[in-house]
Length: 178
Image (cartoon, rainbow, N blue to C red; front, side):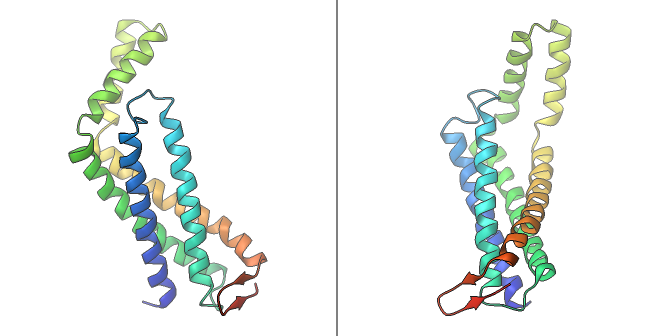
């Protein structure tokens, strides 16, 4: 494993841990229990944290290795994304098992309240609650978290690398012109 890949794996772990901390902190701040709409704030912060993490990761990969081009940077970004995806699965396991084991029931209740307030019939509400019961599971969250971390990491890497290619990256003793 080359230095660029090791650096990417390290940053993937850091990104994953930062996202794990944000997931748990968001719960303790009440973002997971104060309604479905408030949860959108959680998602926006998650994307912002992930973006900053990948900028730092890719800069750390490219700074000491001037020979890392776009495809090499994309490979490093994919490694970081894969590692962060693995941490995301572990984060969901911890969340469902220790931090907020009643999450599925909370989401069932919020679904019931939301669709009742929308004026749906009791049968329609219960149909939506049954769908929520099937969706808000550890298995679905672990899978979707891993896929989201992997896809977001790769897409962010592809976009970030376009900008890193056009700018010089100045390090303590290194100038990398792209």
